[in-house]
Each structure stands twice: as C-alpha cells, then as structure tokens.
Amino acid sequence: MLSFEKFLFQSDKIKSYASIGVYTRNIRCIFNRGLSKKLINPDTYPFGKHKYSPPATKKSKRALSIDDIGKIYNYQCKENNSATDWARDMWLFAYFSNGMNVKDIASLKYENIQKDKKSFKFIREKTKNSTKDNLQVIEVIITEDIQRIIYKWGNKPIEPGNYIFDIFDPTKMSEKGKRDAVQNVSKSIGKYMKKIAAELSLEARPTYIYARHSFSTILKRAGVPIEMISEQLGHTSIKTTETYLGSFESGQKREISKFLTAFKTVE
Image: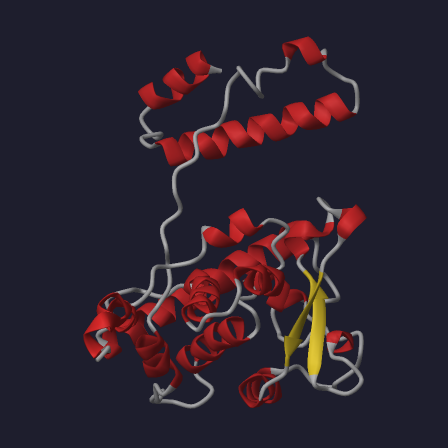
C-alpha cells in the first residue's frame, strides 16, 4: 500500500494526503467486504495495526459566527420564491434542523412529522446501511422557522407518504437518480449562498455543510454538553462530533479571561 500511495502522489491528479485518504479508504472498504464474504485470505489484508493506515488530515472548522447567521436569517431576497430565496431557506432549514444534510432533507416525508406536529424524527441515510444493529433516531423540534419553511416550500397534498420537499421524484427515481438530485441541490445551494454571502460581505462562502458545522458550534459556544450535540447530529462517536466544532469566539474568550484576574475584585 505504501508503494500505491507513492504511485498516487506521482500522478498528475493526486496532490494531497486528503485525496490519498479518500482513495485508500475506499480500497479498505472493498477489502473489508471481501473479508466478510470470505473471498480473500485474511493474511493478505494490508490494513490495521502495524500495517497500512489511510492518511487522515484534520478537518477544517466550517462554522459561521452567530452574527453572520443572523445576517443570513434577516437577508431580504429581491424576489420572493426565487432560486435565491429557496437556497437561503434550505440552508436555514438545515441549520435549524440539527444540521441535516441534503440527502436527509430530500428523504423527509410527512410521515416523519409526529402526531402532535411538534417535532419530526428521522434516521440518517448515511448510517442506515452501516449501523443496522444500532440505528439512531434523531428528533428535531419543529420551531416557527422550520414550520414556515415547510409551509412555504412543502409539497402538496400533505399526505404521509409524500416527500416534504420537491427534490426526489417518487415516480421515477433510481439510487443513481437520487445521488444526482442531491448533488445538484447541494451545488445549487452553494451557488446562491455564495451570492448572498457576497452581498452581505461575509468572509465565508457558506455551503450547506456550514449549516451543520454552525449548528454544532453555536451549541458548543452556548455551553451545551458535547454528548447532547453528538446525539442531535446523529453521531455514534463523540470524536466525530469534535471534528465539527469550531473554536470559541473572541468575545467569549475575553469574557472568560476575567476569571483569571478575579482576585482583583477581592477586598
């Protein structure tokens, strides 16, 4: 595997350890499936302790400040029901709904909404096939903002089996079609959020991924325990949650610095 890593680095397209990690983790997945089906000899398995480990780089923290989120929330689109208006609301829906990703939003159906209409529950599409023995149900409280977005952009009629948002075509949608739809929606949200960010003079260009990171980081800065944040995100490991969390804002750092000189107030 080290020779393969060296080969990839010498190619024209692979220039980073992050890219190497993507390729080698996919290869490890294939090996694992082969092992589970007893198609390969365990002695030939190249991964594990004292063997090859796919490189892992530290994920960048892609979280907005609460002020920047407020600017997006209060942004007035020039045209109601426009593509820009839709992208902003989908970004906000992701942010308010426990940092949901696009595939989970696309998969939401009205039957996910609980009978009291105060929350909806879902299982992350990402984990449905990998953790069937321990599926984690995520509950999202339906706030006024979430309700507004569902009411404005939700499909009609409101039937239990209908998708809430018009992303997946229920009549002719293969798995590849679903993947393509998610990719197209993700790109569209990124495109229009980039325009909004430019108009608001934001330093970041908040794709939908920023909504997930911002959700978790804002909760962290508010003092919410990481265990609860992890549960809200649907993570099976707190270590995964930690990669999402950004640093504290400068104002908070200044506030806690006062504790270091508390002796000055003592008479």
